[in-house]
Image 1 (cartoon, protein in one colour):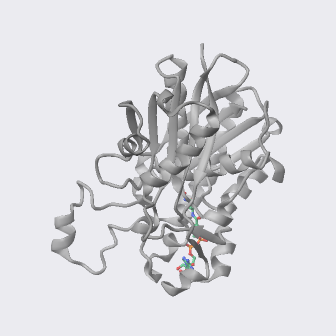
Image 2 (cartoon, helix red, strand yellow):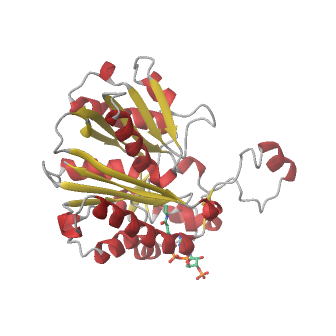
Length: 335
Ligand code: UT7
């Protein structure tokens, strides 16, 4: 039986820093409100005068991950691309990644699970590797939120939270049974789909309808979030996903060397940290610098934690996410 192991990590964020105070040019908000409620100090937003797009950022992160994995890009067998903000409505962004990286005509699958996208994609990679179908899979999470946010006081409850960026991992076949992905756990609860959503344009609300109605109050083409409702579910589901992985692997929270929670809100991460009695060294957060980058947040944080030497060989690493769908899940790894 093969094991799937992360052999390379990389991330890319746009150079343009947007501080909480910068946001005041578009909306009535304050650094104090944003920091107190979310922990965010600044985020990166794509400068529209640059080449950066969701796929382009994904490629930049991927190039670093491939180089660090030590494989040749032609050795990649498959692409898994997690995003809620693809460059085009269709096709998905995975095929652009394949093209921009100049990879052979390998398969490319887009994963549409928003904040849980990277966790879902890692689980898919794990299955493909374990069955022996592929040897090296490129897993990417990338988001361009800034292009689609409502930059006004009306949209402030959502807009201040989200940032742009990309993270990538090369997941490779390993015959070392002692290391790699131990287990993955995926869940969803679609009854709450609308609580964190972007309704149109979609087949449920096409562009011609939106234009025909021409309603200045229409916000259906901006992301909507029922913040407090999402928050309450997030703390419960994050905890469940971690508990499920601990039980599946006969571990206790003391065995966790590094928890990388999806960077949704510092208060959510702190709640989870407290619940599992984890020390500051056992949890990595960077929402302060990047905001919530949805599918990119875990691979960016994982790469940073690894770069800073906070993840060492033999460590038990936990990735956990919750988000739109609702979807949630976890990945348990032995580094
Ligand atoms: O990544 C996917 C999962 N996402 C999450 O897990 C996010 C979960 N939710 C949250 O993180 C929090 O609910 C938020 C950070 C989004 C909001 O924090 P909150 O403490 O739930 O605030 P609220 O939405 O209840 O708003 C409180 C007040 C409101 O004013 P009133 O009605 O009390 O007068 C808002 O209008 O804060 C106001 N407000 C703002 N004020 C200044 C909302 N956004 C802002 C803002 N600046 N940006």
